[in-house]
Image 1 (tube, rainbow over the protein chains, first blue to last red):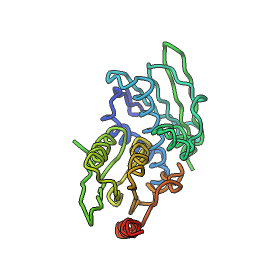
Image 2: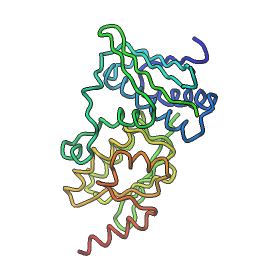
Image 3: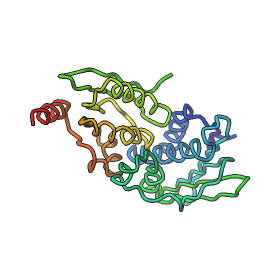
Length: 138
Length: 119
């Protein structure tokens, strides 16, 4: 494992570790503090989704977060070995509808897309899921 | 180590929950407990003060969605106050100002509750 990689197990108590890691990496890459906060939130949402949905709160799942900087782009790749996920099945949030349906989730993916330039998912069933978040370094 | 806490003070029978630190999927259950307890005591007029809240993720936002209907069915409300710009921006992006009253100061939220009661 090098400085650009963080491996955690799927427990929400590790979210603060993830935020510290991303804070350090994004500041080093040259983002301003506003952008750093946006990236931290996007990664928090991605990891929270993995803990809740890929691993269904199983506390022993592995989550790997890797940072790469390529062509002025900050690229975060998050890999897990839980259940596969189809982002196309997640609708855009409609808060009035959510209230009627007593729904409390569904906001995470929307925030990830808002705060990053690109969000993409790859899922190989029974093998791994990979979410890649990209943001241009200004 | 806990990077979040919340405390409740009562003012004119209105409950003021003060949030501090980081509200994420790990700490959201602590806030849920507070709402559950207030509801169990039939305390439905609630102000949530965000002045010392540094960070919120969607798991934290979900807590407000989870209780609002129950509270309004009982003629109460959750009113939100003193958000920093970053936290407000996240609420705003998700459309929360359509459903929740957000004030600069606790006093404004409190007087709204008191005013509504005399109707």
